[in-house]
Amino acid sequence: MKTILDPDSLLAFESLSRLGSFTAAAGERGCAKSHISQLIRELEKELGTVLVLRSTRSMSLTEAGQKLLPHAIALRELLGQVRLEIEDTQQQIEGELWISTTPSLSQYAVGPLMAEFAQRHPLLRIRVDSNNRLISPGADGVDFCIRVGRVGDERLVAKTLGFAQDKLFASPAYLARAPRLDHPDDLIKHATLINDDYQDSRQWLLQCGNEEVRAALKPILCSDTNPTLAVSAINGHGIALLPQFVGETYCQLGLLQPVLSEWHANPIPVYLVYPYRSTIPRKYRVFIDFIVEALRARLAATE
Image (cartoon, rainbow, N blue to C red):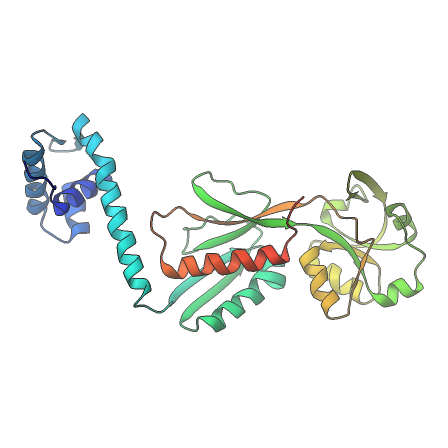
């Protein structure tokens, strides 16, 4: 018996096991179906045991085949990783990159960050979609999703980026003429701008350390979009509860300022979600490293 098994035979065996047919394995390996059969026979002869049970309609692995399969898979993954590492030294970062996220994250965080990423890697063709619907990465060409609140599929990789934390913001002009505001209980004296989540209760549940307050409100406007609330606050119409990354965007421009800055609404986790891959192409690895660092700097770090 040889000391080392033939790699081609092991790779043919792995393809056959994964794809379930000699025809499909031959298509993947770029050879004739008869060649796959020959490689399997040679592997069985070398090991002195039957690996594959064949019939006219199906094939299955024997106990010996099941024991061999993890080693064949490991060989395929190792060779794939070797290829990627070699390509890293030879290839530029190029091709398609498609990200799906929520409208607010797209407009105020992901979109600008991806424009910066595109400047670093001009051969990439980047698309950012805004959608509140739960999109699965890997479907319809989407490479990555940035989701708020839930992942929904245990088969996906979910990397925590931080927390979307809502805080209070108002324009300097509004605060200059508005009643004094020292505690969430004082919000009942103020014009407030609310989203649909608070339309029925007309209360904001706010936290500061271990203290929690249900602040009663007299809202003058309700909207289902953060930009509508933000622009209304900028125009001096009241106080808005906005995602921190939204409010801070306008604070940097001098259009809004924080209100009761130590108070916030319940944080919601944000995840970078993508399909599991045993070997990750370079453009994906570079994107993951970039977006994880950049968004963690923009989002709340802990609850």
